[in-house]
Image: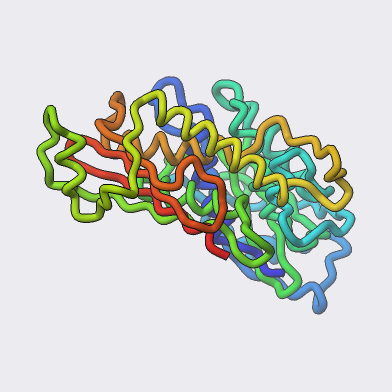
Length: 347
């Protein structure tokens, strides 16, 4: 199974946004960088010890690391060996506290590194760290390189950073580099929406082949919403009057809470392993699907209503989600913009 670089990068970008910010600037205090590389195939070169630093630099594409924020130069590399784990749903299981040996090591290393930074890690960060560790090592990872670096050739080792290199059986390599105090690229709400919907689909599966899909559109509605806002908005071009239910604040909160529970129940299918009892499954204390869904709704609410606002109007068709294969829509309306979440749960 090949390294899923897109999914790893998506998780890393969201993790940057969820980590405690720098108290002085309010911006993300950590850079979590994913860099693709290549190495010999496992069949051609089975590592029994750490490769020379020149080869480590080549495989991990050093020194390029944090762009304008700085290069990094390997000064030492440790080869870590693990029992071969599973090659499917490893991120989901690791996020739920069920990592294999390789993912467990990455979770411990990442957590130790991040806890040395500003502020405590909140509850949603920990399952996201687990998911990142799991997807980084999910293709039956047996070897991992932990690389210690300096900021310049021959410089002092930087002990507050983490650099890990993995490779799949075909030689595709992926480097995870984590450092404090480096500039995090700006990301708009549209990117964050994409990250959230990508992760939601990783946890919600109708069957072995079909994940639940989320398509989000945000656009101007071009309407003046005054005292007759509901009647006015029902003239919007994409609105079918008899399909949508108007939600007040309390009803919207109930719809979202029931959807969170339905999503958490559905995600158990990929969070539990064959060794867990389905007669009395113990759900994880913190299911990642819930904060990701909340992040999506919060991001869309801010997008249409501003940082301190609430939607002027909200409508649902098929929400709360029950995943019956019939599709669903949630509509959030602001003074100028409307956001629509289309859910595809067809099989």
